[in-house]
Length: 384
Image (cartoon, rainbow, N blue to C red; front, side, top):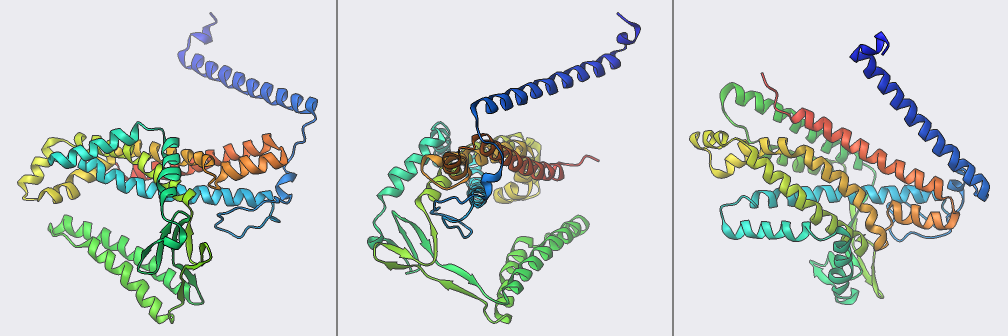
């Protein structure tokens, strides 16, 4: 063996160079082979199809869309629908998972068993079957539009969806948005000030109640000063369905329910394991200070448990985003259904469309992972 190869550091660098060169050569071979096969079969390539007319309509779009819109617009609608259902799925699964995780360790036998049954039941049923169950069994058996479940003549629930008033913004609405941002900034400052004050004097400040009051009163004051620039459009029954207002379709609701309930089981287990990982001495110290069980959970146990559970919860958030692609089974118009489905069938540009779709999911996952890992680093206990 040459003398320079006896150096462990040099050998390590050499092995890494060989591995990188081999990986690049493999990618080059795959790309060259794919290009050759495409040329042999006469498959049309390129991204010009994005500017071609789609020629089909989308039943649920957060932005204006017509059959004359382009396939690029189809991609935008699918992406927005994916982000919307993923966002609300993360919110609801986090809330459900937190409650179930705490219940799982409750000394009350009934609550403990309910939480255990929930976790073991929904965790072991494939999420695709849960989506189909909510869509074909639960939501399909709701009453028709003419016999809707009526809540205060403003909210209507039937087998065509969930209908509620839709807010319309007029001139001056920006003042309400500015008031909300100001309230959030004030809450952040108050929270920081309250923590410093507690470290200095030992006295607690009602940050939650103060923040809630700011979030309600400041936008309300801005709403009145701006001349009430927000109005509401209420749903009304016309023929066999409701018109006007905000509509949540059965496809959206079935997907949201299934993703939230399924993902919440894993978040609950992460919360439970985080609570159990908190040293027993912490709980005993909280008891010796005279804190009630609720105060112990809120101020001592949960803050430490969440820090421990965050890495596992991050993985569940990413799984939820990727599982949203199962909406193709019920026709919810997210990215895979309308772009990697309908647009692909119309244009035949499989390589480009699948590449765009995969890169989009990769980018979304990397951004979410980056944000949550930053949050995890901020939440870590700093040792002195």
